Image 1 (cartoon, one colour):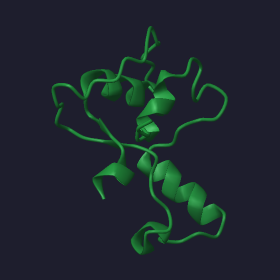
Image 2 (image 1 turned 180 degrees about the vertical axis):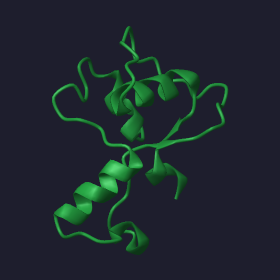
Image 3 (image 1 turned 180 degrees about the horizontal axis):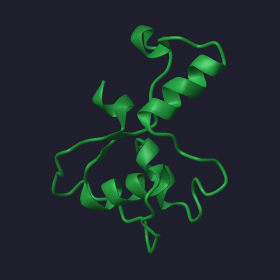
Length: 94
């Protein structure tokens, strides 16, 4: 049986994903990391973001996230980008 590669994008298909734990925008992520004593771990490849939002939508990369409310917060922005095909998995991009 062939193993199917998984992506962080698969998490978005789970109902109620990220409703209990908030997603952070870039500034909030950096601020919270600094509050916890972590500085620039991403530079050394030790801290990879879960998602990256691109300005460019790619046909065929849309993720069916079901009927979700696209609120004006990081979770809503991620879900909207997924529906539009603008969400990327940084681990798959290298």
